[in-house]
Structures are given as structure tokens and as C-alpha cells.
Image (cartoon, rainbow over the protein chains, first blue to last red):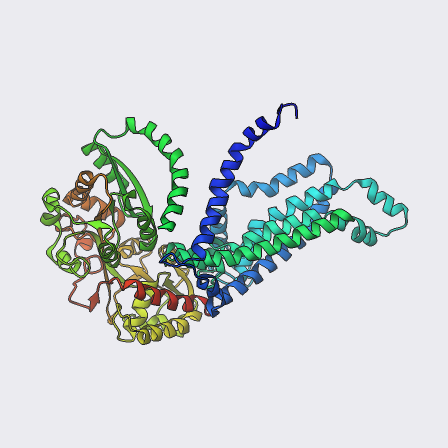
Length: 275
Length: 356
């Protein structure tokens, strides 16, 4: 803290970030809320938000939540063992492997998703290879499965990294102590490793669940626009239907889900902190 | 008014930095000022832009949009964002009705009246009565593209898109108006109807069709059909020449129930700050040699008679696909349906898209 001689200069240094937050986070958020609770004449209404209860919209929301939950669970099941393997490795090798997982993210997200489309198509790369070996083809393009696949593929690194991070922070002595006191492998895992990695798991879940819930690009490309998610509806309100009020109203509904997710996380975090 | 204030407040914050960045760049720009052009993606030979800049000394800022609706959303906030725009028929009507475009001074656009065919001016009257606002750039039909090795029925009707034999082999357009045009015409209704009963019948049919549809796509129809990913697709006539060139098994048909005749035209925005340059641009686009260059590159039918006469490839010059006989099938242009009509269609389309 030598850098900041007094509070004033510290505040000055923070100014750009405050400005950034105001212009790109606070103001847009206020605009979304403002649009969401007004109609074309600028008068107050709850009808934009209430639209979510209509069958088409509600169905899309339920489907979005469902697909996001499935993707998050799959990501967790894939990421946790991998995080354990990585954290038990020697430093040199695991940075190499972590880089491997981040490497695809150097390429644009839309391009990667587009690639899956070409891979999965009826006459795509995967099916061509399969049929060459006389194996039955897979036909999941333009279905919910393809969307889940796209979500898992794109968001998996966001689950791996925080889990790996929290696992590698666990002091080996704690685990050794548990073993000394007679705990078996399973018991050590359930009582020591898992609770201590909970913060990583929680932030991993948040970082996968929220983008999965709000995506519209993946569902458009891999779902062939046949499966309508809530993200698609909101996108269409802004680009096609030119109804910013409805689009914002639906965004507010989505935000409520995100807040619930965050509240659960912070509650669990507190509990973890006490333990 | 409050709404405006909020947007302005945000915009000012964002623009402040952009302005300082831009003013530095202005000095080395074209000597005759700037021109902001907003056109469809892949809808011009890029060399033409360069040629325009060289000949006129005007610095062109060229942006692209994917749908009329995206274009509208951008202009609705600020019509001065662009000087010259190239939307389709019904959207031009909407822009005119909402006072977002300005009447043209044809004295400064001599090539327009000289080179654009009479029949296209006439068709344009549907959405621009008196031909005051718009100069046709490209036109065409919407039809069925099918692979003759994969389809053994006679394709002459929109009904083929409901044929269960081709389940999973059908590509539909992911755009409200095109999807409803097909479903409405099949039922013998007008594609511009705002009768809720007729629209709702069309919705029912589209929902019934959904299980047969492989995907709802826009630009990807072209590549998926060339790659034989599907047997039948709904596509714009402008893609027919290109797709047939890439895959000779592909055939384009205009169904007997008729179709939409669309005309994309240049308009000058109400808030344009470079009207003179915009007029020069439109005039340039109407030049025979330029229109021909664009046609050869994008293969969308040109309304420019001078360019049509100079097409070298005889097959294309006489092609009924590129230049169909407008009397040989029933056709109509899309009209702007009004705010209520738009709402009705987007709500009904929502039912189709969210159906299982």
C-alpha cells in the first residue's frame, strides 16, 4: 500500500473503473429496467414482465432452464475428476494441460460453434468417418442434444479452471491429517476435499449456468432455430420485432434467475466460511 | 421524452470517446467528404466501392445488415447514422410512413430514370407511390430450390414443403414474412393479409410442417443445399445461379401458387448529412457498367436494362430464373402491415417457433 499515500489518490486511481462500471454496467442495467417496466408511450406497465407467463414464452424459459441445468451437471461431472487429476500432477505438466484447455478459447466462440455444426451435420465430418467404417451415423444436429453438446463444449473451461484452482489450494497436510486420523479415501473426499473445494464448484456452476441460460447463438446454430430458448426470444425482440420493452421485460425475468443463483452461492459461501 | 433522455445520456458517454478518435482520422479522408452506406451483407462487388471512392474522392464508410428488421432498429434510433440505405419493399414503405427517408431529387440521379427498366418502377409503386423515394437496386422472387437426384416428385407447388416423404430434408426460411407468404399462398390467401383467421390458419399449417423441417435458416440455405445436406430449400432467386454453378443437380422453381416479388432499393435517410454524396452514390450504382459488375459478382437480378443487355453469358442473359417473365405466375410485393399487423405476425410466428 505504499503506492497510495492517502485515500484520495487511491480514490483517484479507482476512478476509471468506477466510470467503466457506471457507463457499461449501471447505466445499461437501469435502461433495461426502465424499458422493461414501460410501454411505447412511456407509461408504467408490468405487462412486459407478465408476458413470461404466456405459454410460448414460459415453455421457452422452462426449456432454457432445463438445458442449462443439464449442461451444468455434465460440465461438473467432467470437470471435477479432471480438476483432481490436474491438481495432483507435477506443476510443469499441469500448466501444459491447463493451457490445452484454454487454447480453443483463443478462437472466436461463434467459429467454434459453427465448426460443431459442420462436424455434426448429416453429411458432416463425423458421420462421414463413421460411415466409412460401416458404423451407424449420429443424428443429433438440430436437436436439444446438439445444443447441450455445444454448451458443454463452450463452457467446460469455465468449470474446470475454478475447480482446479480451489483443489490445488488445499493443503496436502490437511488431507494427510485426515488419513492419519483414520479416514478412508471416500471419507476424506467427502469430508475434506469436497467441502474445501466448494467455492470453486460454486463459481464454476455460476459461470456455466448463467451463459448457458442466456445463450442464443448456440441454440440458433446447433438447434437449427427449431428450438426456441428464452435467449432467442429476447434477441428477436431487439433485432426482429423491434420491441425493446418486451425484450427488456423478459431480460428482467432472466435476471431474477441469475440473482437467485447468486444468492444461493453467497449463502453457501458463508456457510463454507464458518465451517 | 424520458426515454429519449436515457438513451441520449448513454449515447453521449459512448460517443464522446468515439468523436475524439474519429476527428483525427478525418484529415486523411476523401477530399470530398464522407458517405455512410448501409447495405445487405454480400450485396456488392467490393471493387465497386473502391472505384466510387477513386472517381469521386468521397470516403465511403460501408456497413452491412442481415435483415430488414435489424436495419430498421438501427435507423429508428438515429436516421442520420447512415446517408444511403438499401432495404426491401415493405420496409421502405414503413420507413416512408414513419418519415425516416427523404424524397429524391432525380435531376441529380440521371442514370436512374435512364437505365432502370419501366416495369420495375411500376412494381415499386406498390410500396413507393409516385416513385418519390426509392431507386431499385436488385430484385427477384422467392422459390424452391431442390436437388433433382433426391426428389422424384414434380416440384411445382409449395405443397412439396409439406410432403412427409421429405421429412428432415426441408430447409425453411427463418424469416416471418417469407414463412407466412408460403403458408398463406398455399391456402389461397394474400401474403399481405392482416385477417387474424387467415394468419392463424397459416400458423396451424406451419406448426404441422415443423416436424418435417430440418432447420430454419437464412443464408445457410445456399451452403446446405450445395453440400446436399437437404433435398428441398426455400431460397431467393438471386442464389439460384450461384448454387446451380456449384452443384448442377440443383434446380430453382417458382411454384404455381405464385410468390413474392421483392425489390431492394436505395433510399436516402431523413437525417442524412451528405445528401449530395448519397445522390452521387445512387447515380453511380445505376450506371450500366457498375450494375453489370455487381450483377456478375452477386448474381442477384438487376433491374438495370443497360446492364441486362450487356451480360456476356447468353444462358444467363436469357435465363428465366434470373429474369423471369412477371406475367407467367401470380406475384405480389410485400406491403408494410402496420404496427398491429407486425405484432400479429410476430406473435403468430412465436407460436410456430415455440411449438414442439
